[in-house]
Length: 198
Ligand SMILES: [Zn+2]
Image (tube, rainbow, N blue to C red):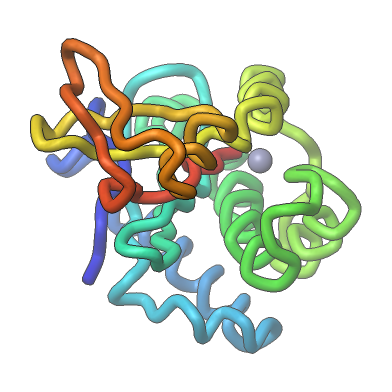
């Protein structure tokens, strides 16, 4: 089942060159499938391509655990596509697909724009330049908070628990944890590590 991670700013309506852009995304994914057998872990039907129009980041590869299974999304900024077509088409597509491949081949421990990612991005036809400073900032932030855990309580609000609280809850040293807005979360409300995005 395809699961959309993003909640806000999703663009569902058409925009100029949408079909051409999408065709290149799927072509790049196809190239990745030929080069990296690990791509078979994520069939196309389980890989949503999401368009958004908020913020200044060109694109994201997002991964989060849903029912103990990794769900991947590729996201692209429609504003950036309209303003900066060539960069988005030639570079951002392989950039984000390379994040997906890098995750599937090397896991979450390797740096998001490190040499392993770089080699994959170049193999997929990208330049492997770190396009957006803003994006790098997010990456650094992400690494600092990588050991936070998400729980979803009865009210449907996600609650982020630190490693220590997560451990206490999972080991039964704490029966529940909660806030006024999210309500209580219990051991079984765990939905996974905070999503990675870069
Ligand atoms: Zn990146």
